Length: 226
Length: 248
Image 1 (cartoon, rainbow over the protein chains, first blue to last red):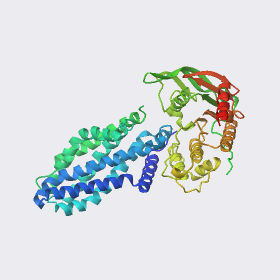
Image 2: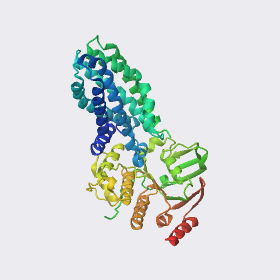
Image 3: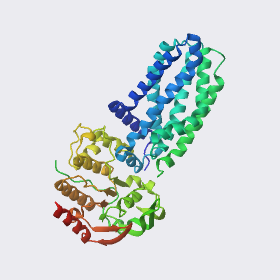
Image 4: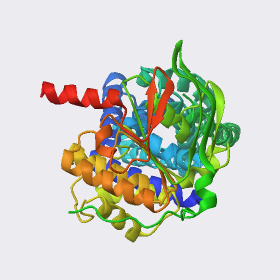
């Protein structure tokens, strides 16, 4: 019996949105955390527009990375309550559909957060991009996917460990370093207008493709690991 | 709301041929958790179309055995064949599993839960979910979230989740825990009816006497082994129940 991956991905995604809408566990924590970073750093540095352009790439992605970890930890926590994950595992639904739904869900949550936080960054850091804004959008999409695809996978890997909330950043951050460097580099390049972000964008694209494929290939093993 | 009847299981019409083939074949099944042996070399076969009640003390290996048969846990040694194949994943749609935990989302209503789990079996018809909820004596219109259900209602909904795709083989781990005696008897009757329609049912329970009117066989486990198979409730289980009643 074949169960459609697209159907399962869609219904899992809708279920997760409904759960998040009712509990607001992830989005509230992410918003609060990002807001804190924006406000505290703006008071600490009090930068002018030129300085802002140089440091904002790092600041923005540090804020989003830590906020994303909050959402990623929640992703599987709700599947562990009442051992709901077992109900998925005994069903004929493909494991990859669950992974894709979780990754897409996290991507959308973090993207919403970025959209909400972007105006605050502009206001607090007097940010005006010298380079084209569409490139920032592209960096945002590729960078966010790089964070969530690995994050979703490693969050699944750490769900059976005793201190999973500590384990996730320990595994995720080192493996995300190439993507993070590319994201920060590309963002700074566009904001300051010093050259083009072609190389870091290509690195991000390759990173996204490779890690998406690897995660999809290995997820079934992770899901059924004891 | 009273419990009602179930439709006959797909491909399991109780024909002679199907009832003669073992639905589960266990071959020297061993399971270690660290150095603890939860199962110690179980080799048994179970026929189709029967209701088996697995009994035994805590730690006897009942739930571990059920989880291995459901494909949730891998055996350390030995093998098993389910519905004629050793590839359990390939027959997942023919098996229904009800765990010790409810396996339900607390933040969703009963219908929302079933709608999601039905989707995992490729069922997109709301009528199937409604019917499953009604059959366990719950109201499909109930908008209350599962987190606000009583334990008994959760157990019923969990049973509905396990049977909504009309499985041939049902594996139920403690379906009567936290259910009042009257409801538990009704559930036992429903399970008997499902068996009559051709399903094979495994019930792990500490309340063996409840199942006596409908059970085909009692499988007693102790220390990770199957120690007896009989048509009557094992005396050890009766004495446990009696001593509990005396305590009360």
